[in-house]
Length: 182
Image (spheres, one colour):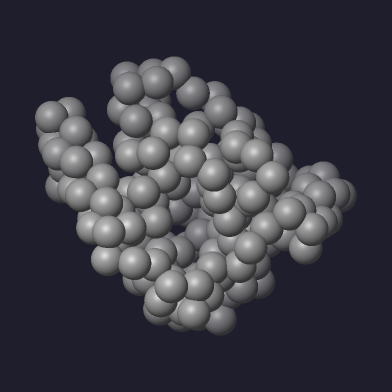
């Protein structure tokens, strides 16, 4: 993993840079680095439909809250967010313009820096269509869209916990020596 730990991120970044129609990502622990966040925002600015399906129930409170800390900015950038509500979300998949990523890696520093992960980049339109259909079925039946109105309902304590969690995870990443990337 040490030698190839950024390979998964590079595949994501390349696909996002080339995306023209759609980016649909379902990810359990979403704490992406600056490059991924910039690539998602850039795609949304280009008119790409960018949707993220994320945790709606906190399995690990700190990661969940740190992810939520980024919601305001993501929504402001034109990225559509959904939270999966029925149970914990463990998906780590993406569909980007007819190609798919499936694997074990989350979009967070701990997957790329500390864990042994494996993803497969699938260049098959039929598979990507099936995965998109499955994800969209979940978006329609099991998710809440995170809108500015939903975000406004968060109280000060929730926002403070989100900010504290975000900063704590960033400090954890700093210990790895990779804080400039996150």
